[in-house]
Image 1 (cartoon, rainbow, N blue to C red):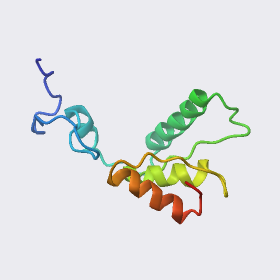
Image 2 (image 1 turned 90 degrees about the vertical axis):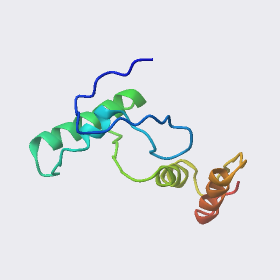
Image 3 (image 1 turned 60 degrees about the horizontal axis):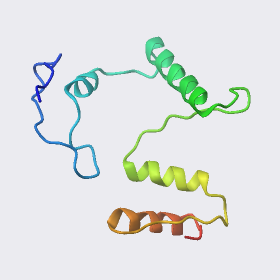
Image 4 (image 1 turned 90 degrees about the horizontal axis):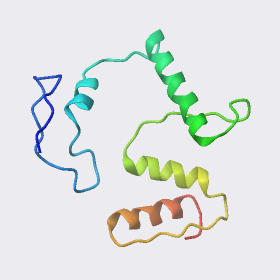
Length: 117
């Protein structure tokens, strides 16, 4: 399989495929986009974020008058904790298939939020 030429030749090619959890390999275009510094006060940044938030609400099929989307950054574990902490109500149940350390971490997160699992 031939790889597309990189728009950012200063970024070395990564021959590895993502085989384990974590940001081990990303496309050159993604790495190139990360070379730009974005300031949260810049109008182009604010417009980009508002567009992403609007599109997320469209995907969810909800009314922007009653719902919002909040963008958060963090690790995969951070995303799992955010989902568990907001989607599982207090006293709710969460079923976790714990066949390794990632699943066991989800159980610990659920315990921390006092949810049954």
